[in-house]
Length: 437
Ligand code: DLL
Image (cartoon, protein in one colour):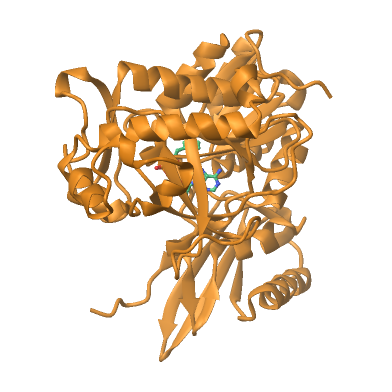
């Protein structure tokens, strides 16, 4: 396979040069950060009062971590490090508590971010002959505008469809010959199911690739989307605090996500001890943004669980690859004392051919115990026959989940298309247990 690079000089830069570049950019970022009261105080405690105090990349570890809570406490302008007049855009993510974290961009920041996304898109083999339908939310969420700008930068024809209204999505695909789409993996599964229901013929659309991200999904989910839609699916990772999409992306080798190390520094830490893990081990990803002047963020605890592959990628890029993100440290459910990640359930159900494209987990209190119910969609016709195959399937799903997480769930089978679908990130867990106050 021949691989194409958007920024060949940077994407294939020898690791020694990459480290020198990181050090130079880290110093720059520290000098921006020192303009904010927050970092001035934090860094002074660590003995860093100017960029000259960063002498090598090892000095990164002297810098304290930044958390989402810190960003919230700085709302709205606490992390702004350039005059307000230099800011041309903001993006915000609300999260669960309602207090948003806000990221500001200067013109230079937008240009660098756009370049990052263009690099990701081009690296999957796209070019200006492609028609790109961006089926993700526009607005304060970074997915819409981030991919929109990246697609235009590559020279593709970008259709800003946003999510929702599948009938209209199919019309756009047919009318304009869409070759590439971008969506959350859960929305792609929904699109595929609607395609079958609405009788849209695969031959009537020219789709060949999809970028899927913004939420965790398993390798089986990727395979399922690829097989059902007959396309290539590329995993796309990013977060608002690090600009949004364009932080790490799969190349055509489709085996891990290259973290753009000329633009970000990635570390993997043990979330309990906060110490770095051994090379290649799993843990929490910590990121430092090297490509933004208006909101510098140093050593951000993403809460995302991943790890670096240690071997080189056949594509020739020198930037290390992250493993598929399996979930977040704060995603973990404790059910009757057992730690369960939603991704473990997804791995089991999406690997089963009999299961449809959607599922949901509900956790409740039953007396003193927790009770997990897993609701999965199955085909429509299965409900017409006698109940024996249904019972057998339910039991098979229950046993397979139990073998994976040790807990025996209640399993409910639902008709295809009947479980709730979100246009943005999928809500896979409903936890109805009363909270201890
Ligand atoms: O989701 C940015 C984005 C937009 C990424 C479009 C990819 C595509 P936030 O709303 O701030 O930003 O959410 C970031 O989503 O910390 C992860 O927990 C999760 N996430 C994002 N991409 C992936 C992925 C955008 N590929 C949070 N796999 C992150 C697993 C992902 N989780």
